[in-house]
Length: 128
Image (cartoon, rainbow, N blue to C red; front, side):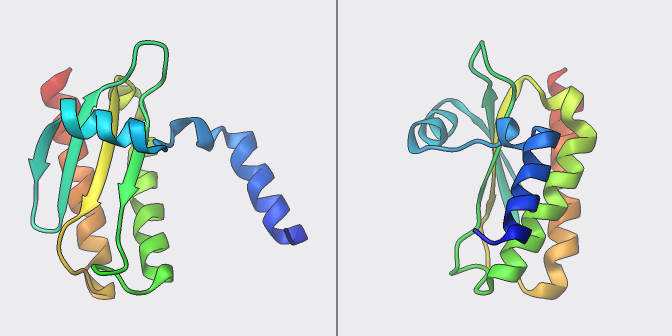
């Protein structure tokens, strides 16, 4: 790990970002099995109640098939995470999966991130 990567990882740890990330095959499978779905033009959002002792977490499914360039996949996830951070208090009860379902070009990343934020706002308002 380079010094720059070490600093970035330490920064993420100090912000506590890792505990809000959904990870692991079992966690994703549980949300897919128990969750409700919201469909949009670019995205499918699946959400289920968080396990009792855990905070709500967010996971992403963005394949190379729908976004070939890693820089675009990372940009999309960063933009959605910003929206999730703003809504974290309302979404803390849920584990959420954001899945890009159709091919997404660079020009549409902003629109897809806005769609995710809109859907998450509706989930927070409707389910509270």
